[in-house]
Amino acid sequence: MAERYDYGSGALCDLVMSGMKLYPMVVGAGLAYWSELAGTAASCYGDAVEALVMALRDPLNSDAAAAKLATSARRYLLRTGDISEMAILDLHGGLKSRMVRPGAVSPLGTSETGGERIVGALRSVADAALNEAWKFESPETRPDLEGVRRSLERALEELRRAQSEGSAPASPS
Image (cartoon, one colour):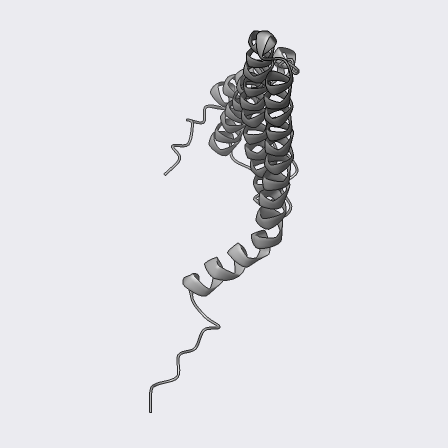
């Protein structure tokens, strides 16, 4: 007989259990992504069929049909990029909300050391900058540069506070 393994203990089991808690969110994000992508592809194929029918009905006006097809393909590519961008941002936001430590109110909480507060503030700046950088790629959204500026000011405030308290920044390891 094979030895029985105790799956209830150990870091690997904890990791698997934590991953299983994320599974519904990841599947939901994936399904939303693929359904949006399928809808966009169906719209593009519909436009292509319409352009083909238009070219068959009036062969002398095939330039208009080709222009319509090119416009449809461009719109499809832009929309596909937007869908991918939004799916990544939604998944990142969902993962980030699940990864918040229990009891942690903000990265600038009072229960942390000066170095931990600085690291948290710098991570907050990096997250804000990354989220806003994605918005530069989309013509429909405007980046919130004021929010990035506020994050930078909070990080500078934490650096000044740590310097006045005499604590050195903690190195993330």
